[in-house]
Image (cartoon, rainbow, N blue to C red; front, side, top):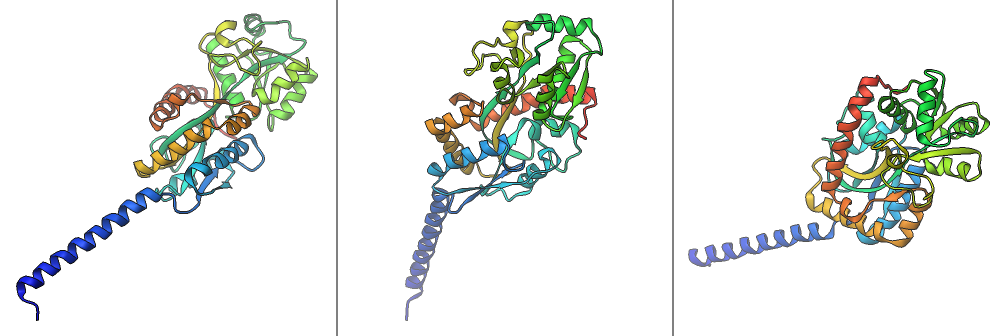
Length: 332
């Protein structure tokens, strides 16, 4: 039989051994995340530009994470259904969401949501941005932005602006233009900017604030005219089109950005792993080329951190919520 002294010594050694095994196991779990596939929620149907961006990034993230990212499209209610799915997911790093300016800024001002678009998510990092072009019908009696704004003011409530739907980027940008210029014009809401572009080309509508991927080919074909890009820098793919600062409307910035978010409470080391994978993906030339082909401008490396996204996200809410609420913008 063991003496009491030997029994206590053996018990102490056993406890130390068990503690060591647990510590090793905990360390291994932290080091091996992810151990299975990660679900990426894209809050829009398959086939659109956001879906394409999500799938490009899913492929780019795979090499760093060592696990596949499975894209699940959860459309409906202007992206709020899919975004809500991310907010309710377990904060374990196995569900991430593609977030956009409409889903994480606009929806918070125009919907009564069961989640908060800022405080119920952990920022992972910014991906890319897509400014708009201010474009008009060819027969407009203006060839630059200053002349166009003067024409709007000289014809109050007569000019028509095409939008892809109430609460969308083109509509909100138009509301912003009214605020900045004090010009009065009417909105004509279409089911998407594709049909709106056809009426703009035909001269049935006066102007639009549109995505370059949609409008730039028509500008190049001479079917419509472009006045400015709503960004502080010219588009690499359209260096001949001036910025709003250069054209006479300084500070009129508007862009539809994409970023990655995780559910609130996701561990910081998991967020760091996801951010590292995002940064690596955005440095990959194939990923960059594919995003650029969609008209996207990739954020510089110093703006790809979780902290940068958090600051940017808050600034966007502070900028757009007062405007949206004052204008009474509500989704149809």
